[in-house]
Image 1 (cartoon, rainbow, N blue to C red):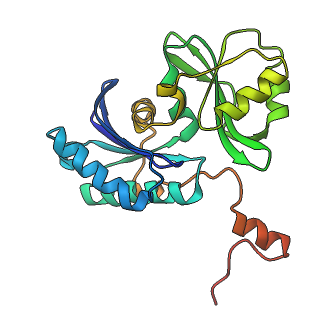
Image 2: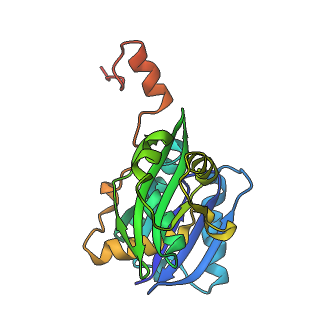
Amino acid sequence: MKILAFETSAKAVSAAVVEDHTVLASAYQNRGLTHSVTLMPMVETMLQNAGMTAHDMELIAVAAGPGSFTGLRIGISAAKGLAWALELPCCGVSTLEAMAENVTAFEGTVICAMDARRQQIYNAVFDCRGGCLTRRCEDRAIALEVLAQELAQDSGEKIVVGDGAQLCYTHLSEQGIRCRMASAGCLYQRASGVGFAAQRIAAQGGAVAPQALRPVYLRLSQAERERLAKGLPITVEHQ
């Protein structure tokens, strides 16, 4: 199954085509440009250079969150639009699970971390054995001190991945918890990881129609928090 995957959850943007655990094509930019401007031209160029077209694809996959509210909406909108046009199923993938795919050669505990600000990280923890990932918790927004408490009794090898890896690694090390950061080439989320995770999810019957694709933010946006602080409803009711 050829899978076209998008990753727009953070500053960098990437796209990839994967099939049978192999990356057939990939593209990556980390210049801080708006994803709405860069994503689709990147996809078009990548497919042309690889001698493929969107019509060769069998599934559209996208990082569905957590991550940047704007970035996630851009990626999901692109995935929905393309899937509708091609009449293809979609697969929304946890950003954290996708980044864990970067280090499946590692044996031990994989700690996924994205900087969520406000003294928190977006986090998921996986056991990685023989190239297979097993979840130890659901995706969550969690304080670093709480994560450190959870890992205090884990004496096995531990690796940290994600754009919050340095923040997480520093805190865990200060608490006496031994771990290491993933190498630079495996540290950040990439579309290839989204594709590999989608391949597994689709094989388990987890693909959905485009209209069912939804972002997973894990917490309220700043605008929603401000409305709640003022005693207002989160959404504006239309008259």
